[in-house]
Amino acid sequence: MDHQEVLALFDRQMRRDSRSETPSTHMEWDGPVLRHVGGRKDWNAVVWSELDEDGADAAIAAQVRFFAGLGVEFEWKLYGHDRPADLGERLLAAGFAAEERETLMVGAVGDMRLSTELPDGVRLERVTDAAGVELMARASERAFGENADWLRHRVLKQLAEEPENAHPFVVLAGDEPVSSARMDVYPGTDFVGLWGGGTAPEWRGKGIYRALVAERARIAADLGYRYLQVDATDQSRPILSRLGFAALSTTTPYLMAAPGN
Image: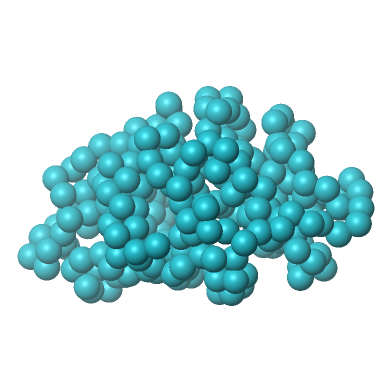
């Protein structure tokens, strides 16, 4: 896999030419900035920009005004190779808060070295209804220690509006949810996105994360996709490296709170 070639393909297909997540959200250009726009519970974000040092601050200010007018929080999804080089510093100066930096990792589906073996008494299930979404959200809350209402909203909306593009999973030990993950497919591109994958602390190191990656990779291959994409934490990056993923860049969410928050 040619890393620079695949990164350029990712930038073009998954950022510059990206489509909205659901039929009730939309993409729109504002000069050199492409943004994803939805309602208060949707993901609102800047996903691509073509900025230079002279125009960056004005473009940032324009996006802050726009989303403030909608009354929503939004994210500027910054990648390590974006320009200008000091864009992150400019976002901080404009009032954004930086979250944890992650690593953009991509694996060629045909090169994956995967196993779906799970511990005894543990099973992986596809989520197809509200009861499954609740189990999935509970697993996420156990894994990350944070409220997962956003996940409930997102997956329920995907299942209602685009079930063919939603591939959510929960891992159960008996009847207890211990891990969850999802895969988003992007028709017309070469990529699928792997999201989540958090596992309850007492169940880590038992092959569950690997099995979730393997199941999603199998589906991606059956659907004809070439690449798996992950925004990897420091915890998941070594596992993904062993499975055949390569680090292509970094990504950092810069968040701007909704007015009044």
